[in-house]
Structure formats: C-alpha cells, structure tokens
Image 1 (cartoon, rainbow, N blue to C red):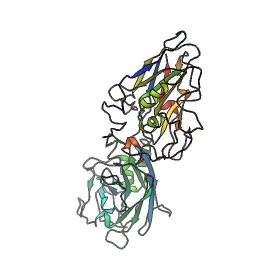
Image 2 (image 1 turned 30 degrees about the vertical axis):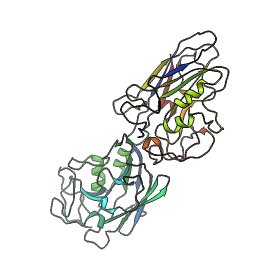
Image 3 (image 1 turned 30 degrees about the horizontal axis):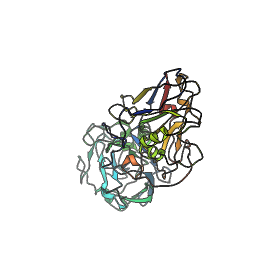
Image 4 (image 1 turned 90 degrees about the vertical axis):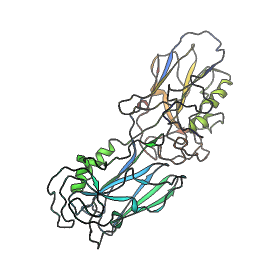
Length: 431
C-alpha cells in the first residue's frame, strides 16, 4: 500500500532509514564542521483555489434562464463549494452541503453530469423570513438564529421548492484534473422565482485524506458570520470573497532533504536544460524518495558525503499550520576549502517539482542564511497539474503521467498559481 508524503504520522519513504547518511573518505584536510539546517517556513493556507462568479448584466445578477460556469482543478477527495444569495428573500442562500460537491467517485473516476441534488437552500438566521418574491423588503427584521437548511418550509412557515428545482448544476470533466461546474438559474416561472447574487467558490486542500477546511462558508446549526451575512442579506459577495481569499494559497510538505558535499565536479544532482539523468532524481521529484539518488551519488567521483534528512516524527517537513511552526532538520558536516554543497527536496504537492541548490551549489565553509541559493525546478518527467489539486500527483494518491522534457526552472507566477518567494517556503542556513 502506498503511503503518501503528507501522512502526518511516522513512516518510511521507500527504503529510507531515518537519520540515514553515508560518507566516503573525503581526502584532503578537514577545515570546518558547519551544521546545515533546513526548515519548511511556509505560512500554509487551507484552501487551494478560490474564485468568484456573477451574471452579465448590471447589476451582475444571475437571472432566471441565465447560467454561469466555474473552471477549477481538483484531486480525489476534494470538493467544490460555493455560496450565492436567493435574491428575493431576506437572508437565504444556496450552497452545497458541506464539504461541497464531490467531483470524483470512490474509485477515482471523475463525476460528470447533473449534480443538482447536492445543492441546498439555507437560512442565514439573521433576519425574519417574509414571503419570498420581488416585493421582499430589505433588510427586514433582525434576529439571531443558527444557519439551518430550508426543507419545504422555512422557520417562519414560508414554502420553497427543493433547491435542485431552482438551481441546476452540471459537472463536466475537461481532462488532466480540470473541471467545469455550470450553474443554471431555472427558477423562472416557479413559485420561487428569484435572481441569484454574485457568488464565491472554493476548494480545500486534502492532507492525509482529510480536508483542511471542510466548511469554508457556513456551519449548519452554528451562528452565521458577518461575511456570510453580507451575501445572504444583500448579495454582496465582496466580504466573503476577501475572507476566503485570505485563507487561500499554498500548502506543501517537503520531502526528506538530500544533502551532498562534493569537490571538483559540477552539481551532481541535476543540470538545467538536460533530461533527467535517470539515477534517482525522478523518484525524489515525483515521490519524495531520495534513497536511489543518494546511493547513485555516493558512487560518483568527486562526491565526498551524502545525507538524507527526514524530519523527526513526521519524516516529511510540514509547513507552519496555524500556531504550529514548520518542521526542520539539521546535520553536522565535515568540509574543507574548495568543497561545494547542494541540496534537493520535493515540492510535495506537485507532480515533479523539486527545490534544489542553483548552479553549482554553495561554498559550505561560509555561514549564514543561504536560502537565496535555492531554486524551484520542474524535473520534466511528469505532466504538471495544479499543485495540490491534481489527480495524478503521487502524494494525493495518484500515479504521475510520464512525459519527457528537459529540467527547467518553475516560473512564478506559473500556469496554475502564484507561489510565495522561495525563502518564504524553504529556509537553509549554515552555522
């Protein structure tokens, strides 16, 4: 059974032995004994993607007969959630039941077709409900009740058709983990005809099989929030968009750190502009397993020592999560004048991206923060998908799809997202 890189319990990656290292006779005098420390300093976010949707008119309502489409990426276990106001009400909104609309079945096949049954109608609980329709007076009488699903009638006795009879939702798979969700306002001519407000959608990261935020917009049975109230009462999606945007960004672990000390040769881990050499970098870049590459490096002339550094307890280096700091590893080295040092580690929630020392590494006899010497590279051996939302990403229980491209830097922004600066993800120091 494959155990993913993000499993937050102790585990082994391939044949990795915790605290493994191997050394050759370095030859020449030893002049210094620095300690290298590598930290995952990423301030992680729970949501991987977020966006807004709206109609085409002014105001940008989605009127009966109109539709909007949402384009997104997702991995197995992830779900898309959204929120939009039932416009001709005091404080009702449409949203899927938490955690959202599932987009893959239990076997990992993409779901397509009508998913309207997963949409529900909710009462925000912040206003007394009057008879829904164009004559509703806003804002209405204030009150403070928890968010509840409206099934047939609201708490004030007003009647409603099922949400699926008012909003039709269709899911289409576009390949390579990409989907389109189309929402069609079909309320026209019904007893509950209503416009829909501009809305917000989002998708949570999944870590260890658990979504980091399974209820991003609301919690049934719990009092509402000011941001949700703004859209539920007035159709203003800006506050909730800002709220969700603030928790959307990057989450990734780093695989056990490969460290190599060498002399008289070029960086032995990789070379930009060439194909992967086939000695183990693919396993590191795709699966976070550095053992094969470490063993190959030890056989190279000019390589003096190689280390594979797993984090205590978790093996992978986790990012900062809430108040918990990110993981770190350290290793004492023995180096001499003329030596070079290079490292490599997988960007865990990718298909085959890896962080590594740029160019020919660094002089290991210097001290201080050397994070600026680290770059992010695409190994060119797997088809890329949205990082943290790809069905073929190994650490999201997928199987990478092979390709053959040269190793190159990952641009930022890239085709999928904008990453923090590299020193805000990985910190490397020599002391």
